[in-house]
Each structure stands twice: as structure tokens, then as C-alpha cells.
Amino acid sequence: MIASVPPTEEDRLDELRELLRTAGVATVGEMVQRREHPHPNSYLGPGKLEELKAAIAADDANLVAADDELSPRQERNLEAALGVPVIDRTAIILDIFAAHAHTAEGKLQVELAQLEYNLARMRGLWSHLERLGGGIGTRGPGEAQIETDRRLARDRIAALRRRLAHVRSTRSVMRAERERAHLPQIALAGYTNAGKSTLLNALTGASVPVRDRLFHTLDPTTRVLRAGGRDYLLTDTVGFIRKLPHQLVDAFGATLEETRLADLILHVVDGSAPEDDLCAMIRAVDDVLHEIGAEEAPRLLVATKADVIEPERRLELSHRHPDATLVSAHTGEGIPALIERVAEEFSRTLSEVELLLPYDEGARLAELHELAGDLEREDTPEGVRVTVRLPAAVAARFAPFALSRGSA
Image (cartoon, rainbow, N blue to C red; front, top):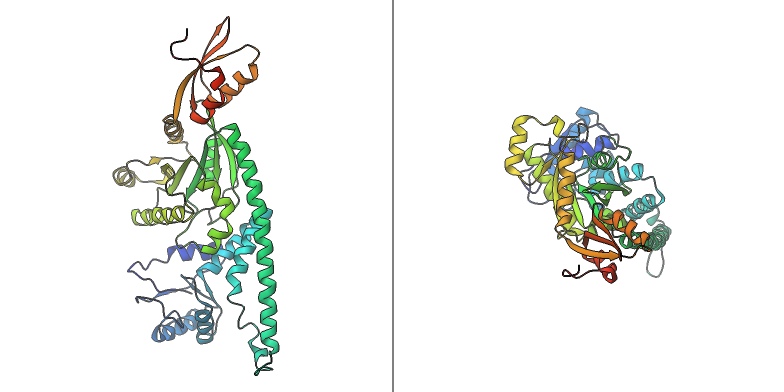
């Protein structure tokens, strides 16, 4: 059974149902209460609580899921009133993340998020002991146990943060190595299950596992994309979602940094989704990009799943999102056009330079071929004369070999 108190008239619970499906939970009913704010003590109002209790009995439900993050007090009061376990949106997402984390880094990030979420909910676990002691100048055994658990949790959180800081520094070293190679970096960002991993496979020939479920990809995957005769690094990372819990944004800061520092973001959306849902997904991704400081990065909108889009929907997409590139990773439709758009986007940042490389600088010439792809070359008595388009940072490295425009 799922419940929601929306602040607007948007009563759709499709996303929560999909989250529960991914977590392996079947939904037997749903209930929405329209009120300005959730009830501070019980999330739902007293009358709605009675309705929900009757619905639970009628549908033989054994769990209630709320489409918001509940306060510990709301969660306790709901469970006491309904007589069944109650979980909130954040707990569901954390459970999915825990099931899908495979690398050591991913598991650390999930554990950190879970501990921070559960730390505030430890009160009450030992309430049956709190009555056994107390009074002025004394400490009851229940309170002592709670404080011990909290201290252990805080110590573990501090240890996890230290280990993730080490991961962040390691990523920084790896990123610096990539930057020294001066390969442009592209990040795939988008709503979870929009088809980012499938698109990564189609663009790069990779074989990243793909499944039709939310948050299947948690750990960043980087592959080389060849476009316009030039190599690019294309990274796929965790998908976004409406009301993404802050614990996850904080815990996954090291991997989300790949998106924040990208030279270009491919904003991937499910083109087959209804327009209202599509716009809501775009807003959700924009919110997360803003939260991680990536809102100013250049962006290209990519609408996936073209092979299942009806002609009328295609026409609507072309009118409402004229800048979007429509692609199908399964049929290959639009993939060449997308690669061309990526190359065009980066070509605006390139400047043409003329270089004269001595014949004993063969390694430099090979590096140019790797960085720039196509180039014009002419063998002269002094060396190899090259005309090439390069990013400013790369051009500076070859400044000793640069020719003035007037040189013969």
C-alpha cells in the first residue's frame, strides 16, 4: 500500500510504484491526501489514517510506503496507528542502492548514506529499557545503549568519510592523468532508466550490463568515444530521480563529480514518455545538476527509445524540444547525428595552428594524430609541417613548434 501527501494537484504515484517494483515489492493499492503540508505527527490526517487502516485490512497489505521522507516521529506514529511496518521514499531508494552496489566504492557510498539516514531513527529502538533506570544524576540503561549505538554509528560515518575522501583523491589523480592526455570529457546525465547505459554501449561499442529497472547503474563507467576523428571520454554514472535524497547526493559526491567536471553533458531523456512526465524528468535532472554545481556546463538534450515512439509523438517532440537529438540505441537511428553534434560542439572550442615538427619528433606527431585525428601534413626539408585544430591547452604544449601565419 502506498500513500502520498502532495503539495500540488500532481497526484501521480507512478515513480513510487516503479521504485517498489525495482525493490521487489508488489503494490496492492494507493492513497493520496490533498493538504498544504503533511501532518507533522502522522504524515496523514486522522481521518485519512482511518481510511488507510481500513484499506490495509481490505487489501491484506503488510507494508505502507510513503512518497516522501518521513520524520522519525511520523514513522513511529504511523506504525502505531496502522499496525504494519511503514517505510518512506528514502528507505526504498537506499534499499535499491544497497542491492545494486557492486564495487567497493559503491558499497561504501551506500553504507554511508544508510548510516546517516538511520542515525536520527535510533531513538526508540531501546525504549523498552528506558523505564528501568533514570532520575537526577543517573543514566538509564536504555539511554546508555542508545548513546552507545549513536557513538558507534558516528565513528563508522567518520571512518567511511575518510575512506571516501581517499577515493576522491584517487579519482582526482586519475582525472589529472586523463586531463594530461587532453581528451575531452563527456558525461551522460539523466533520469534513471532513461537509457544512458544502453546509449553508452551504442556510442562506444561497450558492453555495460543493462536492465529495465531503476538505478541499475551506480558505479561510473568510462569508455572512449570516437567522433570526428577525435577521441572523447564518455562517462555514465548514477541516474537521477525526483526528490533524490540529500544523503545520496552527499554520499555519491565522488562519482557525481564526474558529471560536474565534464566538458559536455549529454542530458538523456526517455523520448517515449508522455510530455508531462518528460518535462518533470527534465526538471528533476536540472535540480540535481544545480545541486552538484553542474548547471553551467554545456548540454545537449538526447531523446532515446526512438524505435518505440509513434509518429505523432515524434512530431510533438520536434516542436516542444527542437534542440533534442532523437536516437535509438537498438536500431542505430540518430546515433551518427548525435556523434556529429558532439564533434560540432567541441569544434567551437578549437583553434587552428600551424606547426613545424623536426623529423626526430615522431612521438609528437603520433600524439597529434591521437589528439586531433585528421590533420594536414607536408614533408619539408626542415621537418613535418602540420596544420591542425587543437584545444587551447593542447596548443600551448606545442607552442615551441608553432609557425607564424606568415612563415613559408
